[in-house]
Image (cartoon, rainbow, N blue to C red; front, side, top):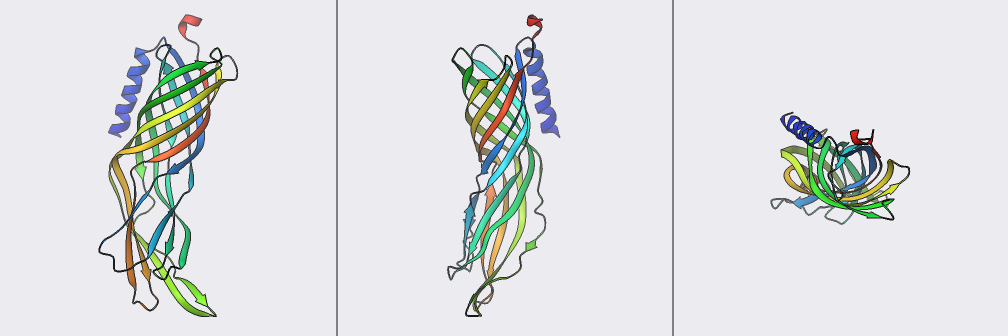
Length: 255
C-alpha cells in the first residue's frame, strides 16, 4: 500500500507541474513472454530433466502521458500483469512423462514510469518513439500455496509399465518487492486529429525482488522413489508486444 501511495503522489506532482502541457490517455493490450529460470539443485539424487516451454501470456491496461516539450514524453499507467510458466518433465530414462504442465505463479498489477524520445515522421502523422524507465509490481499475490502433488504418469511397452513419475510443487516464496528496468521502441500512427494508433515492443529486466517455487520430480519405477529437485524463479523479466490507442486532450491554451 505504501508503494502505491508513493507512486500516486509522484503522479499528482507530475500532473500539477505540467498542467498546461499536451496530455493523453489510452488503452493497451497484447501478448507477453515471461522469462523464467530453472536450476537443478545440487543435492538431488535423481537425474530427471525439466524443460521450460515458451508460453504466451497477456498484458492489458490504461496509460496516461504528457508531452513535456517537442521531443520528450513522460508516460505511466496501470496494467494487469500476471505470470505463468509451462514445463516438461523428462525421466532419467529419457521418457517424457509430463508435457506442457501449466503453473500460474503470480497475480499482480504493474505501474510503469517511462521517459520517451519522439521522432516525428511524415509531418507528425507518424511518430517513432524510443525510451527507458522502470516498472513496479504491486498487489503481488500467488495462487501456489502449500504443496500440490500430481497423479503418477506412466510409460508402457506391450502393456508393461517401464517408467513412471509424479511431481510435487511446494515452497513458494516472494522475496521483496519486484521492479524492473524497461527498454522499448514504438510507433504512433495518426487516425484522427487527436487519436493515434500505437504499436510498442518492450523488454523488461528484473532489478529487484524474486518469485520462486520448487518442483520435486519423483521417479517411482525400479529406483525406489528417486527424486530430482528443481527451483524455478522469475524476477519480473518479460518481453511484451502491445497494441493500443492514444487520445490527446485539449489544453487550456487551445480553448
